[in-house]
Length: 474
Ligand SMILES: NC(=O)c1ccc[n+]([C@@H]2O[C@H](COP(=O)([O-])OP(=O)(O)OC[C@H]3O[C@@H](n4cnc5c(N)ncnc54)[C@H](O)[C@@H]3O)[C@@H](O)[C@H]2O)c1
Image 1 (cartoon, rainbow, N blue to C red):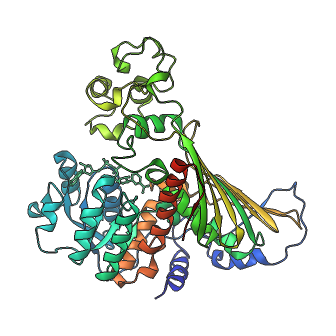
Image 2 (image 1 turned 90 degrees about the vertical axis):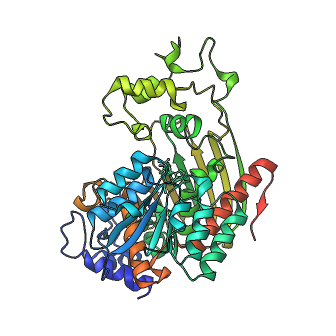
Image 3 (image 1 turned 180 degrees about the vertical axis):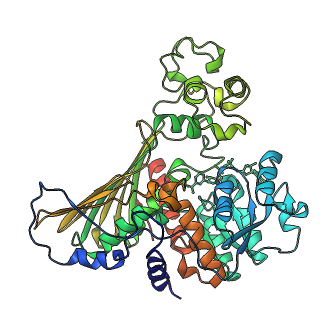
């Protein structure tokens, strides 16, 4: 079964499913978009674009068995798919140096004691005992476990970024080919129904020829402070530069929508705010040390974690409402530090311009200083225009003046409730288990081959930013 047939099949599976917003006729709707519609009144309520939302249920003969390596936030997210679809996936092993997380996953998935490991090396000291591994360790621990897993015959669900250097990324690609294994990169946005529909509309020709894209990734000010100033991704050297650590998804989505190779990239960006010299007078090392600016500072750790109760997962607390326990974490971990006094170097604003084959251009902006996260995209074609916000998008037809909207309200669909990244997290796992079961990587969108290409765009963007020059991509 090739990918097209598979998609068709999944589309058909949605017929009569218990999903709200699923449209059985959706697969034909794309071609309908290209037909000349009667001129409409642009002021009237826009009509709907009926591209269906696919079921998250994988169609496999037996559950694919996986070992979770890195049972943190992402590892647990992918493991949850097995809890929702036990006929499709079974978690048979877990590895994490954090005992609490390891035990949580072991208990939830009833994993045999002999298949619970600390460091990932222990997994590979055993003979192969599952179909696949999920690698959700920190960025600097992707390359080694992935290379070993492939050599042992495991298929791999690999968190992004693939690896920390272009050379390592290419080595993983070569290793996957050498051992004929599947590597699915967790470019989860490709699987989100919103982005799938957006791409289908562009490919249908509904906006004529694609000419340019503007894509924005608003990080959200508190998320920036949590992850890229105080938290795990604050150092570009220990992880990857933020254009990969955060925005490899966006370069990948742009590349995927354009569907042509990127030829040149030029980037700018810097760390504007979160630097020692910007600390207000009298600000101590920690927000908890009686900072005189605490009540006014948008980045106050007390405000983000204690009052607003955001991003608490990192603390592994038994009760996230226990404010005394949160305060203690702020006193004793990096998350209580003043944002102007951290060991961070990630850019807080970043722009990249790209030119693709055929002269198609794209401009990308990543910004820390926004009230919300998500993505905002504008797509310009010779006959139409699309504008979207990762929840819904509107298609404008120049000739007819008609507006049409894709607005499937994915969050309200029972099956998708709680599935992260617009539903992309679980949809990726669905396609991964299908691909592993059929030993057919064409059932995946984010293959290692495709993902390396957009990662290379990220490495070249960083080279461009640092060298202040446009970089060619061969
Ligand atoms: N696809 C996405 O949208 C997305 C989103 C967030 C993070 N990520 C990526 O996913 C990966 C994991 O991120 P996370 O947010 O889950 O981080 P996390 O810190 O919550 O989880 C990582 C886990 O790996 C464990 N670990 C560390 N060293 C280990 C070792 N030697 N052996 C076994 N386990 C070890 C840690 O104890 C931790 O529990 C990162 O590479 C990150 O960049 C991807």
